[in-house]
Image 1 (cartoon, rainbow, N blue to C red):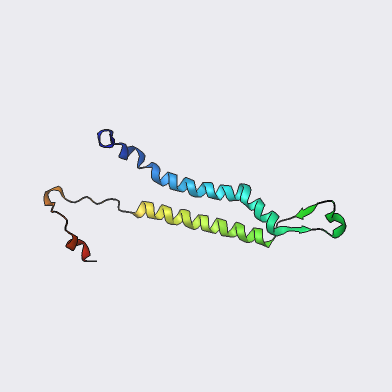
Image 2: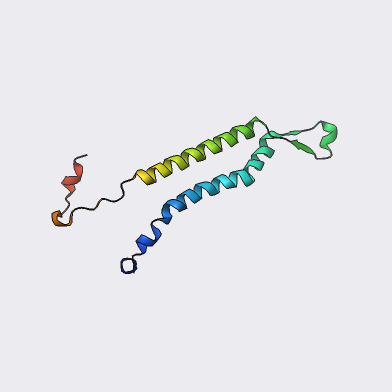
Length: 112
């Protein structure tokens, strides 16, 4: 079925976009939800004992949040940059010349 309808040609351009989409979705998940969890966990300082009874917490951005934001942006940028560079610089699949086909032997693949 795949060879008859050439489905491999239809989905092949979508593979890089799927990879980029996964990276962007993880980044969006961090900034939409995970960042607030980190901020509550590491940046919330409970007020003095009188106000602890009221169960109020003061949450402000701290250095941990800034550090995580910078790391997420940096790692996302590096992943996207290297992924795109690899996708556009890759020579793809090199097919052998149809007239010079010789059978592959295991000893041929041991040259390094």
